[in-house]
Image (tube, rainbow, N blue to C red; front, side, top):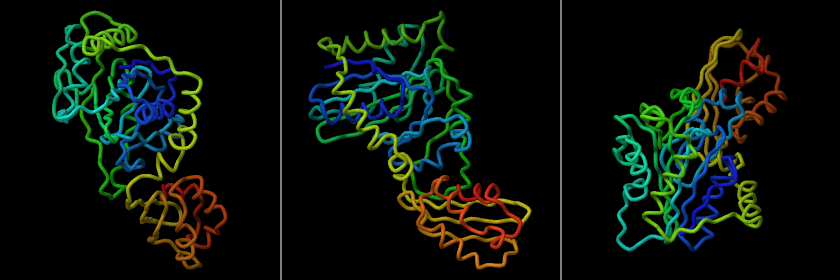
Length: 326
């Protein structure tokens, strides 16, 4: 087994790093990393339905889709992420116990009664501090998890406070559960670097042959290529969302306006606009102009700037209309 701590705190790099290891290394690999504030979305989720988009934009939070399933999570530097990328063994059980055991063992040695509950959550006194997910790739398995050690729980709540009434789809939804930081349950202070060493020591007990690995410049360049081509693109992080219906009503001086959009592969495939507004032009023209565009603020804003909104709605501005579309 190889062991490494990522040299980066940038979420697109670290999620790309996992794929690079999964597809490029024959050896078993144990990776630890921390991300600056970011949102990591499950592979099968509708990104917009999981996040508080205005808050995310205001705070310039990266949003990254990962290879594994499960729910959306918020990362910051108080959150430790661990990832086992392993060759699959014949008859290996499919649960999460095997690769969460070192984390639980480290915490129990600190006097914390941490447990694996349900399918993939680690909890303390019934409160979740770790969610785990996995993916299979030919004869390899990736299982990774978060550990809320000393995270800003308020930011987590704000970042993931999406409006569920906006979206109708069959995408996998995150399940809300009360969360907690490990640091709140320690009888004496332990720093995150110290905790990292404890987890590493527990992994070494299971895999005593593990050798530390340092990413070469060639490794970093290859990971950066994955970032550029995939993990830092709208097409992967938002456009890969399952098909969904977006429904939103706004009220402005022109009246009440409802937008009903069908979105497939990140693009608006159908749009209907309803309301009690008074316009001089057929609203179907506006619907046609926006159909086919990416469901992304930048493109929709540019399209609206080119349209005579007052002729369609009466007294309405881009600032009025755009929130109904995103």
